[in-house]
Image 1 (spheres, rainbow, N blue to C red):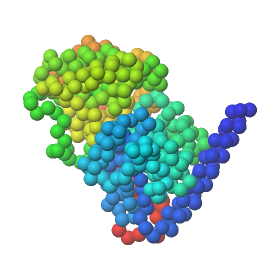
Image 2 (cartoon, rainbow, N blue to C red):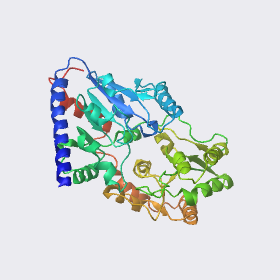
Image 3 (tube, rainbow, N blue to C red):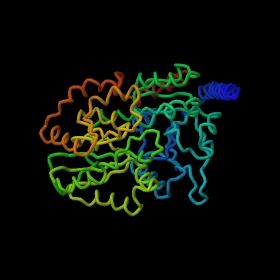
Image 4 (tube, rainbow, N blue to C red):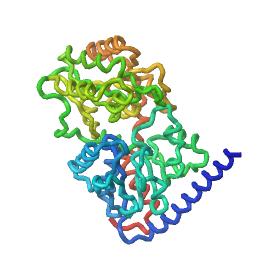
Length: 414
């Protein structure tokens, strides 16, 4: 009986929200001013919509703004780094958190017509989908190309139920969404491709220098460890315990390989909270990667030029497995035997990667694939790149066209 009551409450809440959206669409279609689109951001590392923002910026029918807030556990220093990230890249942005009073600024005060949420996790009070769906259309582009076997968080949260539109990276993700949300209509999910991947159609920036300039090695490798080191993690992808210290020592001894340490933004916190390292030990570990002549640390967003200038990726992360694929370079997948594995999309990718179950296996693969130049899985990887990039091309422009066609009555001249 309790389940039935909860189902009815959920269903009524979804219906009420969708009713609000119909009213908001009518209001937007009658607007005489540009449609205000805000992107609520709390981690610059997960910023995924540059091509969408830039396409909106060029269209007179839209007024895009980045609205920067913070996660509950983030420090003021992290918050300031997020601000500087967008300031340095000349985005139009506003602040949605008062540091002095330690309180969030309600999203309603920014008077949005459309809100793109960066992620469903950790929204502050007055910045949730519940707080804004009565006055603005709500949209979501997954912050990564979701490959994890984590349907509960990726598709079944109330956040996904209440969205106006979910922009899916591909048809497999759309199927996963609809299979897990039987109350959602297919029209709610728009297969757009992922704006993140539009970067592969642009030139590599000469200003993005990730690799140490002190040496000129032959091989460039990214090491990107995941944060799920705790026993209660729903994913358990992390393999840091058997390769974190070992790879640092390997980098010290092999000067002919150049490294960039690209940790998940939550790794440092996870290592301390789970008592794997003290805060001092973690800081020392990161610092050691940064002071070696043949390595550096990169923990910010805008990492696709790093991808494109590398020769290989070593990782146990999820989304990077798909995001790195268009480089056509090899991926060394660090495997945790206790992990939950991958979803329907992820399983189409992982057989094209070089799997390592222990440190000696990883080194053997590096020697064979990179140093001996025997990338025998390359053709397999090339065959599945089409699942990452959509045929219609630029995903950011596709989403702008969709919004324009859906929301603007009697199209305004550009």
